[in-house]
Structure formats: structure tokens, C-alpha cells
Length: 407
Ligand code: DOR
Ligand code: ZN
Ligand code: ZN
View 1 (cartoon, helix red, strand yellow):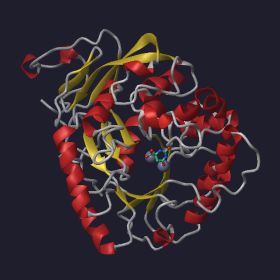
View 2 (cartoon, rainbow, N blue to C red):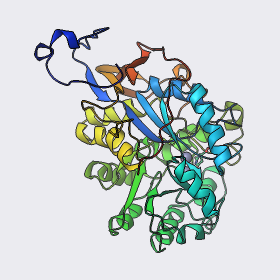
View 3 (cartoon, helix red, strand yellow):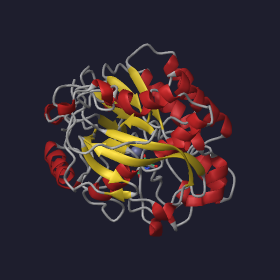
View 4 (cartoon, protein in one colour):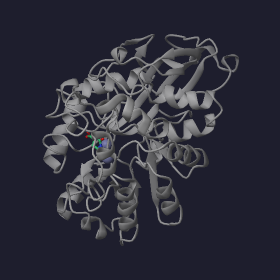
């Protein structure tokens, strides 16, 4: 059985509906599988950093059952051919169900083809492609995901020496504010989705609009700040950079009150050799897919976030925003009869310490090293299959299915 058929008391269920294994969760918490719509699994072309199998292994160990992969692979996902190539790779290697983002390309014809093939969204990296593209983007059915850093502002304000200050000044929050302003001022008729917000001012800007706009926050921008960059160096280097405690507070408030729609990890693995290059040269990115649920659950445990918002922002809302549904049109991330049996059980009483060496992806380091968290995922199911149990990944490579975006 790969779907949820009933929710309720066992005593109300007739015996003939109970088939196969019975698992007593012993009073632990059962969540819908977490949906992470922003991951970089680096496959094809950058598989020294991660691949679809290792990335999805880390996902299931962290209670994540659906992901959407970003297009900055080699080759990039910028044509139907490359999209189909990546889809095959995912189908062969993934443990979790997956959608695929494509680059925001200029060719309307190719965009149409990608749309019919079920692309999740078109991603705009203003540093790579011209964002005037988005000004003419008027298809209501399509989603444009934006990495909001305006290249015109990057590098503008650097005036002090020292890697730490230079790096932070080179990517100021004004770049985010400027890019968001530019996009909001455009005539884009598509659904706009702003990735990994870092600044209070961004929330104010987006809050004033009544267009169809959604946005996300990462666990690292919520829970870490420039002090962690100072402590961890390149391991905590990410674009956009970690900001201040004040920004973190505003992001947490935004997540709780729904101004920020979802949590997405921006899981962006790099090799340890690359991260040893020093703050200015090391590539940006934090591998966070496995630690996301425990970190956000810890906020619930501390009374800083409601359990309701955790489930909404990590499970159902990302599925609804990106049109991730099962074969009957029921969204992922839902605990409902008829929904796919994507489930994660969390031992909410367990307190444990995050250690990079225990992670299941290729990256064995994390800026959350040594942080104590509450709640440990111990059982993950993808469409009824046990893919992770008691610390071991049990799922089979290729179990994951491609999910075309539903309009
Ligand atoms: O920190 C980042 N890493 N930001 C990005 O926009 C890209 C990502 C990556 O692919 O490594
Ligand atoms: Zn980005
Ligand atoms: Zn990203």
C-alpha cells in the first residue's frame, strides 16, 4: 500500500484493512514527509560534491521525502534535452520523489516545452542571466524562482581590509532589497517566488504587494548569523550571506506569522578541499538537508515557533506552491486519506548533538557542528516504503519518482 487509507483509532478499523507490518511508534510524533523545494544535488556534472543518490540519502535521514533540484548543474538544466537527462538520473538514483527547476532562459519556445514536461519553476540567477527576462514573463501558469541579489550592488561598498568584513560588505543586504524592488517593479505576470530571504526589509517590501508572491527562508539564515561566519569561516559561507541577530529575529517572526511561506534548505554541498580555500575563494553553500527538520523542530520545542507552522511551512505549503501532487492530484506533505504515504516519525524527546561526520550526504561538515537539537527522525517512508529506519538508510536507489508540476 503506497497511500494513506485511514487516519484514526486502530480500534475503529476493521481487521481486514490492517495488512503487512504494524509499527508502534511508542508515542513519538508522526509528520507528513517534509518537502524541500530548493536543493542542489549536483547531478550531472558536479558529482564530486553530491549526486542524486547521496543527496536523497541525506534527505531521508532528515525526514525529507520530496525535493526539487536546482538547475545549476553541468550541463545546466536550460533545455528540454538537459531536463530529460536529469530526470533520467533522478529516476535511476533518487530515494525520494522529486521535481526539477530549470534556468530562466530566453527562448519562449523552449520554456513552453519545459512547461509541458512538468518543470517545477524557472530559476533566475541575476548574476548569470539578464533579469530583464523576467520583465516580460507573463505566463500565469509558470513560476519564476529568484535568487535575489542585484549584481549591480554586489561589491559596491567594500572599504575595509580583512576577509571577514570584506566578504560581508561585498554582498550587502542592499543587493537583496534592490533585486526584490526591481522584480516587484516589473510587469511580470507569473507567480514570483523569492528564495532564501535574509533581511527584515525584504519582508516589508513583499508584504506591501498584493500580487501572487511567495518566499522562503533557510534554516541557516534563521538560526545562524555573522558571528557563526566568523567562527566557522568558509563552511558558513553562503550566498546570500548570513546576516545579523536582528535579521534572524525578523525572519523567525515572519515565518511564524506566515509572511514567509516556507522553509527550504538550499542544500548546497561542496567538497572539503574547496572549502579549505579561504573565505574569499571558497565556493558558497551550506549542506543542510539532513539537519533541517531537527533544527526547526527545536524552535518548536523552545516555544519559538508553533508546531502548526512547522508542518505547514515544511510540508504542505511547499507542495502546494510548487504543484507537487500524487497521481490523484492530492498534494505531497499532507496527512490525509488518499495522500501518498510519505511519513516521518520523530523521537521528540531525544536531545542530540549535530555532528558533520554522521551526515549521510557527501558533505561531512556543517556550521551547526556541536549544536544540541531536540527531536530525531527515526523512520521515514516514501510512498509506503521504509527508506530510513533507526539510523540506517534502507531505501533502494531509484525508488524516487519524478513529479511533474501540476498547474
Ligand atoms: O550559497 C549558494 N550556493 N548560493 C547560491 O546561489 C548557489 C549555491 C550553490 O549552488 O552552491
Ligand atoms: Zn540562491
Ligand atoms: Zn540554491
